[in-house]
Length: 436
Image (cartoon, rainbow, N blue to C red; front, side, top):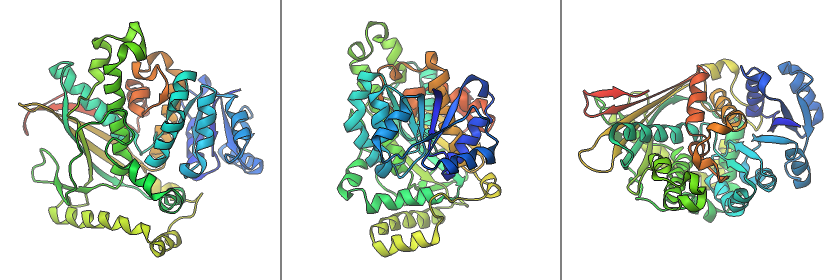
């Protein structure tokens, strides 16, 4: 039996995850196996990465539930790096839910996540399985930044504080791999359009409805920026916002039914209230173009609207011809040139407003090198830090990075030295007080 099973280890991102686990400072504390469709490719991967003989090769085809189930039963935590998840992910989630395992993936596909919530969330709570989709660039930074902003505001103002508007502004350099492009195209070619659209509606993944999201605007000024910096609507909000809203909804549900869900020992307001965002919480995301000017943001916002043309078959054909193929991606040198700086501003719901500012900064390509860090640390947190997981993880189910891991993933990401997180109170443009 291996502690961690990496499914899809020979794929582009799977290789990076495997390499990161192999070189991890806590490597002596866990074992792992690589799940591959081709044993020959598994042997090649072991040789190219210098994996020791203790790393097992598990041959499986994710299209076969019987093969997946047999592999999953021998692991404690499963990392699923095989996408598109709408096409290939259900069997792995099902096996983990049935056998009470812990699971993480890179699904930036709300329609897939909605499907597994409907199919396996209840079952997972009965078997104790913890299913955590979207543990990469989609959607750990967004989810954890709002979580930290909430903690910062409550430490400053008290546990009854409720959140209002929360906005995240991204600056990044990232190159999409063939697998990412395949996932985008799969959304428009295989997933039923009505299910894609339903999963993108406000609170489609949340058990509790909240306040409506901010309306679409071509350019939005970043709070407290002087001179002004503008962001454009972000495409990744389509995958991040549902996760952030699910976090809010899961905590709000827990607050209203804590005694039933968590039992007498965890039913107190003191335990759950500090985690809640409140009914007035709203979330939005923007990407800051190179100059951050109003005009550049408007132009990028116009390009964002053009994304809808992916419903047109010739546009998808052209995208497929120009992009990397599945299994391919940017070079190591190009990935090392990547970076991400994401800044979240979250206000209190009531006047006088107080703002928290949380910054997530990472060096290296956020879609691949940093994503391998994010998902591996999520898996290791579920494996090695069980006693420190938040109360919201205890019932199991289909959770989110924040509700499954909370402070565990914050601490782990900081410890990598590759990601920095800071959170502070902003009372005005001039006055601030750091809490991290």
